[in-house]
Image 1 (cartoon, rainbow, N blue to C red):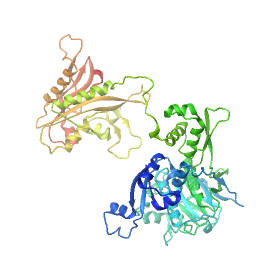
Image 2: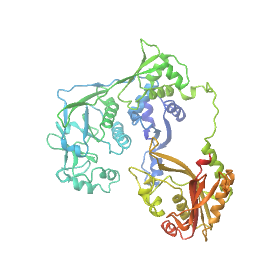
Image 3: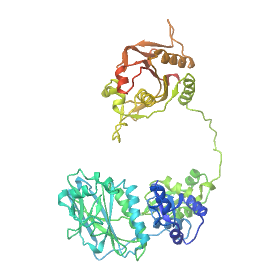
Image 4: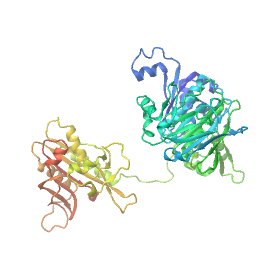
Length: 592
């Protein structure tokens, strides 16, 4: 959930009213936001850097830090927040955004070479903008917030904003070899080519995280104007030539992307929020983007979508009983203009503006009605029908066994569900290809490559982490493992298992055997002898994870439910253990 910081006094001036901290917190809560912190720039710097001297010159102006829902891109800056709150309070109506046709549209041409790296681009122009220091800072901050949020740290979309009066269209979006691209980066004086730029920003605090996005590519994306002046090298940095300032009047906005839908959302958000600062408010100048196949598409779209929702369903889902006209007023306060359908009094026609890309389904509209009505105003009521709830049987058995195994002298551990391939295969003397393991498609770390097929590696790692503790170490865990299963809808299934490890100067097979006997006694499962029809017993077997001749299958009604034995010395060595261990692991699902 992103957090924005706004100056309290500026916010109150824009809202046209002063609030106490408690009053503003209540307003935020009613609007579906949360006032996270009341602070100052000085307090923030002191908290972040821990250096009081460094923050000595910092401002002590009050700053409100507000948590914004991750999908409400229209509230990520002062302009959007103020407009949203004023509409919510009924002080203004939701603005209508309009296109202003210039004498000649700006054109951005996408060349086929960009398909190798970032194939999409969109553009727009804001005319006759008046920036103050505060609105300029808000403009830059909004781009940063979007980059971190919907743009996924510029991997999906990169935003470039330029002073249109310093450049000349038509513009060209190309992909060239790094050494062919030469320009002066933003706020620099030295001209660099693509290769030099990567080295130059390799240690930059903010930009170094974006370099890997294109560094290893044979071509880098670049935008030129008609005079071959570089506007930007997305997603890294803009050129210094076209940088915007407080004196900028006309802003050219371009977004390059690997996801066209996200690029449209980002462009709509920026132009809608900052068209407020145009001489003619809420107007945008469209641009023509020439695609690689020669077709021309106009951006931004600023599409207003219409949805129809049922009044009866809205009331039923939320638990209220309000007439259609009141629900329409509530939606209008939430920036969604709504009116009662003239033909069907039980339906509302709702207009979704280009700022509300978070509304994708009728349930999102119902949620906004609930927010406008006020969650605290919804009366508590009992369900219209009675249901008898009970604990899931497998979980109930799990909780009962946890208590009993702990009383038997074992300490419970809770280990990661994900582990490395070596943990379940190589370290246990097994072949990963022969295991029914679910593999992670794009693992972030070597420690989390597969979903565990056994609880044993997690317990052995826990033993290693606690080997300085006095012996014996007796650990257990009752959790799920995941195994591939072709007959299931998702191709895998969970299996609840109990695993226990005894680590001591001697292996102590009798300790884990005793625990197995105790668990079976609690489950009322007898030891199978003679011609008994049911029960459990041990059947000698060989397993590469266990010492030869000291391993057995745990059998229940002639079915293998687990294994028990003394761990192989090579397994102990793989997990950096120097003391013998015995283990038992079996599924508890047959006993539910």
